[in-house]
Length: 493
Image (cartoon, rainbow, N blue to C red):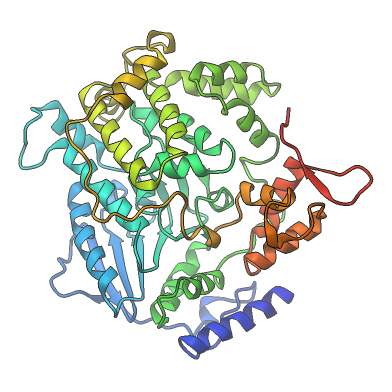
């Protein structure tokens, strides 16, 4: 009841700046039948928009909406879609009438299942010269430009990650200030499975995830589902799929492009975590991930996995790694270690350089052909980790000069996402409070409840904060001898 009362008050205050309307209180008694105060205005098509375009453009009051429209291929991203979106996104970003930009998808299965790599490889197999007006490299160039544009927009951008969200679909969503996961969300960066590497800014966002979670996801291609996409920090909010139309209506009726207003509106639709839900990358599994994937060599990571007590998990993880291209594994690990210390623009430029190397000499073409075309096991070259050295990887993929340089559409950059406050607190933020490095948090020896209360206040009562902070504190802290306060455990064995 306290939570509902808080929400009601907050909604009223926000509405007084935008629209005077009834507050929305989501609870077990709410249903579509008693939600008459929510507008259900039909989308208005922008003049000239082809009815069967691969990306539809819609406008509804103050919102501008992209709808990915290739459901038969799980909305796989191709160059036509990128070129459809980029100029319109630039125009909406400059429009005073546009208050919020929403990205969603048609179809019941996928938001966007990845990039159309089959088409890229088809072109790459032909001459390196222009084929039909499209070079294989051109797709990646314009895709990265769009990804970076989303990351640096002035306007609030909300991505509805409702369904399969992988590869290229991650690039369209993960850099946005607002990323909404649902119970249908299936997240992965599976590029390594096809002899490639995590691109679309993966070197930036994966390297900034808690501990070594990003390294684990990148090197194994592991999937996260539903609320775990939110708990991991990939999504900023978790909203049941059936509420998305009402959320879209609410966002469309706002008369402000203030990110705080947009965030508060989304928060009114989020769902409480299930009390019995266990985060798939938490607890002892998370401790094992941090222990094993902190190494700077693939061989070192496998050695650490062999020493793990949880033999079932470690053996499964080792088997997964050994199925991957040795070249892709080593490039991916090196990419993440470098990306952690780069600004976002430099990450995209590094990835663009890697793309050129992978189109020239790698297992990428073999991986796509084998797995997606011929439906067979790929034959990696080299086939063993020991057959290619880290020094060879460094020199060919990272140190050698590239023929083409990535020209982004603006010069904006940053070391960390500017709107991270709308997501759950990171493990690093929690550590800084425990150790007293956050000036306004209070004393060094804060109790567990004091730390939870601090973050609830800091995140304005955000749902999921309590669960995230407690999971981290239970795993990474211990009580100070003779005191109620907590201390941070630097090394967990």
